Image (cartoon, rainbow, N blue to C red; front, side, top):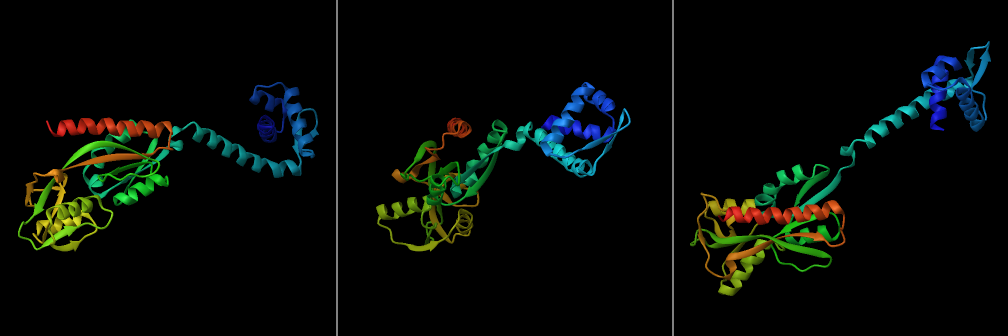
Length: 279
């Protein structure tokens, strides 16, 4: 039918079967036959003959012509779009904990964008529990977190060994803790428990605020060495709490080829990143 409609447009515009045949690179009988097939399909007369060559469009033909033009235009646009791969990019949401979002994910994003041009990447920062829930529920495709948490349908791969330091003024009254389900809060609570400490507690809900309080000597906390800056007092730690693993995670049921390739790329990238950082 698509060929019938194309023929109809040319015949309507030329009002001449011979001229239409030339434009369509067809024989005149073929043009006539296609118009006849379209008329039979629609059950209406589209053209009346006027002499040997000229034809007159019927009111049905006048009604149909602009609508067929729109259909052809839409189809042409669709063909152009379907041939453009940029219109079929895959979405990849990266869910990441606060520390990984600020200090690790930006390191890899330029390479991810360059290596996977047909993927639309977006980044969502949340606490560790929320990262896992996002991956489990397929809201996000790739996750980054710094807390060891077993979860159903989650594949976990170690990508980085983070060094932890004691930051802030040792004489500060307050110990600053992140919100519940934060990876860094878990580390701090474990340290306080193992050392038998019961300091005054101040709660904050993001790393930026925690760092500002440390800079002002309002409190102290264990933080990632990635977060340390020149205006924060800090010192190395010499116990088992001084290291933690950072992981990438994915839903084991997500077996799309592109996502598997992205996950593998992330693993290799951070292996090399860690080696360069500690050379």
